[in-house]
Image 1 (tube, rainbow, N blue to C red):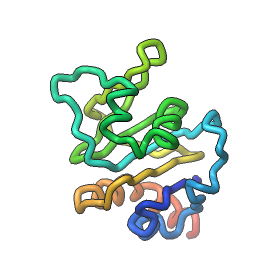
Image 2 (image 1 turned 135 degrees about the vertical axis):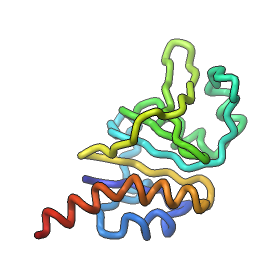
Image 3 (image 1 turned 90 degrees about the vertical axis):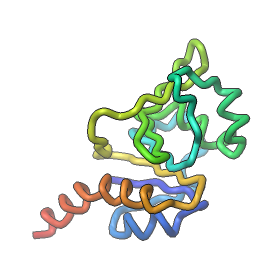
Image 4 (image 1 turned 180 degrees about the vertical axis):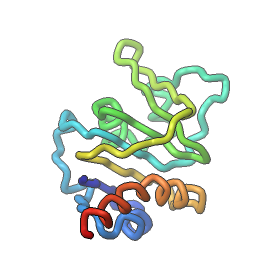
Amino acid sequence: MKFCINKNNVSSIQQTIDDQVKVCWEEWSEDTGTLIDTLIVFDFLVYNPKGESMSERELEEKRPEWTDCILPRMKSSGLVFLFTSEWYEVLYDRCSKAFDFVVCDRPLELSDDTNMFAATVGLSYPMRVALVSLLRPSKSQKTCNKK
């Protein structure tokens, strides 16, 4: 299992995934077509509670720092999840160029191959708890494999 993390909050995430194989976001291939199995974003993005889609333009206006790196990866990744105070699955519609944020009704599972983490804000306590909970199965598996 491989993890890619961005430099904004590398220490917060790195402490949590300390014994895993990590690649810094900046070292990852610039080709955004390179498949990331699972992209996990931690941010305080306020989403429209009425369930309306958010266009690329609207998302770029709310989070201009996402324009060059996060948004292209959101469009090309296998699965995309956002954690604000709860988990959302992020679905991209290529025809309408819009994103839908759907509250997750199932437990998240990391990919066996490549997982990319992006934290565009300092991790809050709930974000840290969510990250630790998400990583717990992979740490348990690694411990079992060592025995």
